[in-house]
Length: 150
Figure (tube, rainbow, N blue to C red):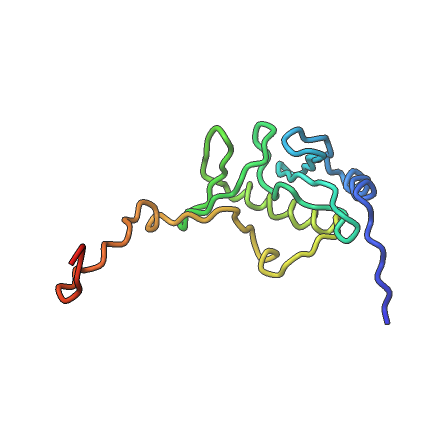
């Protein structure tokens, strides 16, 4: 039976990331978080427990103005969204996020899922046809049922 290799600690993982040319700096937005960036993309890592020593606190996204942008899918196009604005995502940004995400998961020992390895997945999905949809109409009145105080 194959033995399980011990998972590297949080500090060992950060050293591995630095050795692989990732920029690792403290992140004030998450307590104990470290901003890891490369290729114009970034994510925030925090220390976990013994079973999972590295936790991805903020999922990978484009690094814009020191903030990790969320990827928003509106059905017809993907958008990069930060707190001040949102703009259409370019193919170069999507490729950078995907390459960064795969390399980060490999270095951290985080499980890489098949469907996520095929392409860039979004954080939010908002289809236009669902936005502003009216609430369900009130049920039809049934004259044979007593209503009110009768």
